[in-house]
Image 1: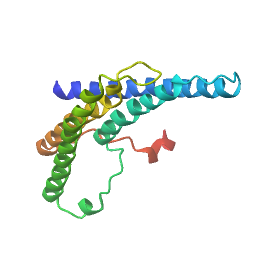
Image 2 (image 1 turned 60 degrees about the vertical axis):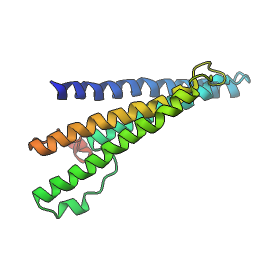
Image 3 (image 1 turned 90 degrees about the vertical axis):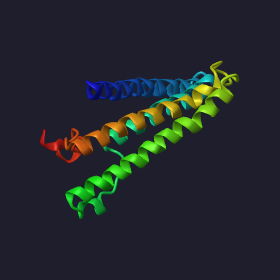
Image 4 (image 1 turned 180 degrees about the vertical axis):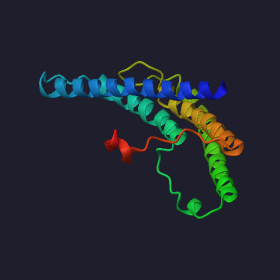
Length: 169
């Protein structure tokens, strides 16, 4: 039940990031249209686009860790036995989990300290620029707990999409 909820959370992050990416393209297009066609640059679109980049990139990086489509080098682990491989993968996962905790803890003062100021031209709290760091740290912790569970219970997580076989479909 817990693992299905984590899967739904990962899918929701992908969905929200997809919507934010579409909005990013629309806002950037509107800015270019306004600047070069209307000769009246909408100034708010740049600040909104920067905020959307954070909303797209950071949580999707956490999903990338979960789905193993991040940059990873398995050269050393390929030469280890199954037990040593599991220990090394677990150690790596725990380090990533602590990185997620550090992201949450160290980003909290940024959010709280800047919440009272507004993002120029948007009127939104400036702390929203740092809130995705807290969310991403939490997602990393959640996903790394899931990975440790699967590593030590002997179950394999669903393998990431093998892009080399897309031509076979």
